[in-house]
Length: 111
Image (cartoon, rainbow, N blue to C red; front, side, top):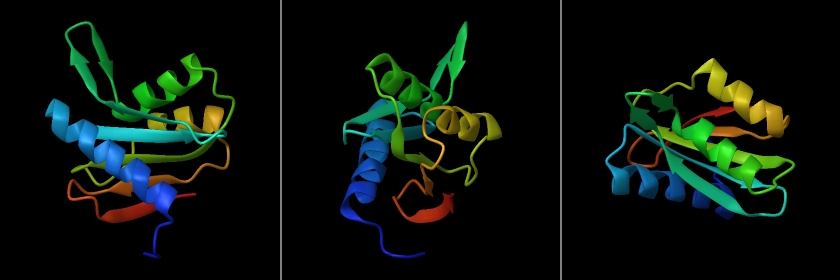
C-alpha cells in the first residue's frame, strides 16, 4: 500500500478511536467536501442495526454535506459490505473507501 496522506490517516485514526471508545465491532469516519469529519460506530440495538459507515454517512448528510472526499472503516472483517459502499457512493461518487485493520493498518482501498 502507498503512504497515506495526513487527512486520510486522520479519518482512520478517528474511526479507530470511535471503535475503541464504544467497544464496537467496527468504527468509521468520513470527510466531506469542506474537510469536516464525522466518526461513528456500528449500532446494534434490537430494533435498529446500522453499520458504522452508514451511520457516518448519515451524520454527514444530516449536517448538510453535499459530497464526500474519503471514507474509512476499521474492522476485523477485512471487507466492506456492498450496501456500505453504495451508501458512500450515494454522496461521494469518487470518494476512496479506506479499509483498515483494528491496529490501523491499511488493508484495502476501494476506488
